[in-house]
Length: 145
Image 1 (cartoon, one colour):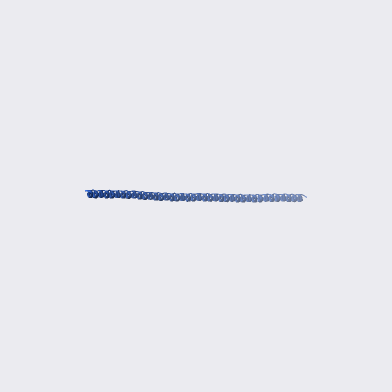
Image 2 (tube, rainbow, N blue to C red):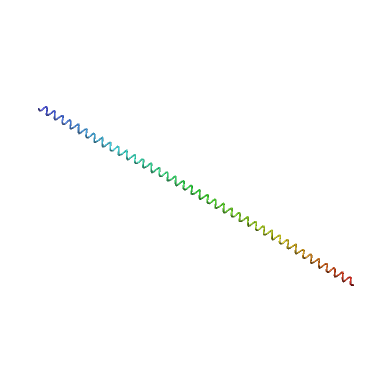
C-alpha cells in the first residue's frame, strides 16, 4: 500500500509538474507571440505611417514647386508682355509724333516757300509796274517837251 501510495503520489506530482510546465510554457509562448505580433503590428503601422507622411510631404512639395514655377512663369510672361506692349506703344507714339513733326515742318517750309515766292513776285510786279509807270511818265514828259 505504501508503495502504491508513494507511486501514485509520484505520478500525481509528476503529472502536476508536467501540467504546470506545459501551462507555463503555453502561457509564455502565447505571451511572447502576443508581444511579437504587437511589435510587428506597431512596426508595420509606424512604417506605413512614415511612408504615407513622406509620400504626402513629397506630393505637397512637388505641388507647391509646380504651382510656384507656374506662377513665376505666368508672372514673367505677363511682365514681359506688359513691357513689350509698353515698348511697342512708346515706339508707335514716337513714330507718329516724329511723322507729325516732320509733316508739319514740311508743310510750314512749303508754306513759307510759297509765301516768299508770292511776296517776291508781288514785289517784282510792283517794282516792274513802278518802273513801267515811271518810264511811261518820263517818255510822256519827254514827248510833251
